[in-house]
Length: 505
Image 1 (cartoon, one colour):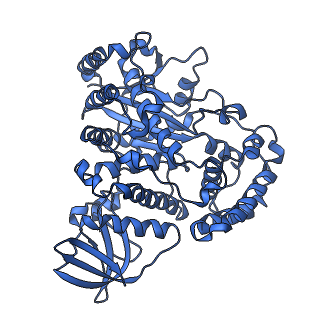
Image 2: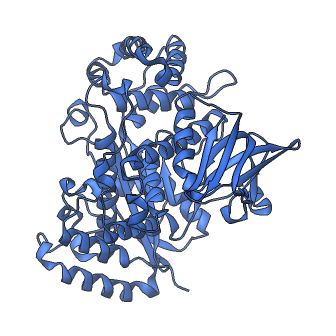
Image 3: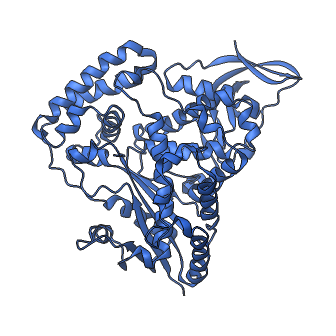
């Protein structure tokens, strides 16, 4: 019987996490690990295909290897829209190599979150305090605002860190009050953090390792029922710290190899590089340039959506590899703070829902707003899972629980059935002219299909509505996530020769 051969590589690997590291100009908070694998019987054929791919791009090799560094970060400034022709062809050919024979796992870990978790390691969830949510909010605030005094305090003034955190959150609450409508949720979270900090008395010494990536992979193997395997890691020097991390996570048959001799490691390196550079481009586009700027929302620039059919197809190929291929609950793994990964997955889902570039051009100037609304929904759902005690380091990609498998649906807050298969969701029939409904909520499905929950004759039902109304739905989701929920309300749906329309009465 064949065993599985797995290969590991990473991107944005900071050998040491210290003040100099996290204040460097090229620092990125996320550490990305990728593992690819296949049955040993398939290895020769897959290696032959990969060798042919590398031979085609021999002109881009460095020291005899085709590495992910051949794609420069600047080429992804606006995502795939800013790729030059040769890089576009390279990524097309690379992603085409992935088929059903290949297993893909990837983990995205916040370095600052790892530090925060060690600082507050002794504080656990209780009936009164959700520490997971608190740690998430503290990490997000530091990643978002990059307060220099706290970044330094993590290393240089550890004993004063609690005071520095209190000063920062108190000051930020006052700044947020300049735009309470947009920032009311943040004000609430930061006020709760201040109460928590009053009770913190000890700080644990900071120590860094990358065990979490392998913890997730071990769960992936268990989920897949894989027990006979080997894992090969890119050789990193005398200490073999990555191998030791894999072994601490309980993995077996771990070894090192030079990437020059292993197509598997080079394949993992290339995928890790693509994911990390797109993550970084998204983060850079959406980060704030100054502490005052967050009073206004950030959206992706229109340039991200000025793409051609090949570039759209490339997003769909990456969606297939990162999301659709060998779907599993633990295919992706992250810590509690996983905003970069959530936004990355949201971008792939968002781009994948377009049938053609013409669909994007219809509302080109609004695509940034629509994507922002969809991201807000995804991030809010993640935070809600933590608030309900259902937080998990894995980010489910079309995954369901055993109970879900038997029912095929869940019950939303309003009490309506929401099916995992959107095609099973009933379609709201909107006749020619105007119809008015009592709408309890509006949402967007994973496939970017707009849905509404309606109260009709004392029964609550969730319906799909025409895709032409997705922009309307996204705008309302965005408003709700900023604290401006207009529902329940009466909504008049109209069907005319010009299309479908919705008006809140």
